[in-house]
Length: 196
Ligand code: ZN
Image (tube, rainbow, N blue to C red; front, top):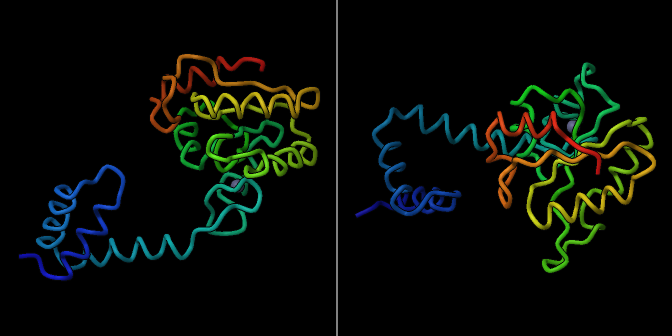
């Protein structure tokens, strides 16, 4: 009973994480009943995002200009650098208001089984930044998973002696992503970070 255009919308929505076929249908029916401008607004927002986003030239987070808003902000402390796996980890750290340094997005975590080696991550760029920006402390905020821990140890071995290396304190749920940690826990883990 679905028309081709609704069918297409349901198919696209069902590709989103956490959205099954039923939720996709519910969302599609919701949009059908909503004023036309709402659908157009949603579609335009998606296209605009896809067209404008590019990696930040310095930290590899999302940017719409050469630099992301954080790298472009002169008030951020350049001597403090926080390494994360993905840009999605930056937002929860920002929400804690406990961190005033800059970030470096590695682009994943080491996982020999999946064929992810140091050369596949932006580790060389991280080391170059540490040397160029006179970084004093590297906060390693990879996820508290096996591959996240392996990445943390690899990074620590690589830059030890050049900078102070710290890791978020325990208390974070093991095996989860940082983006799912609540602000209070993450803020505490940040304040209680320890030498690695
Ligand atoms: Zn940046």
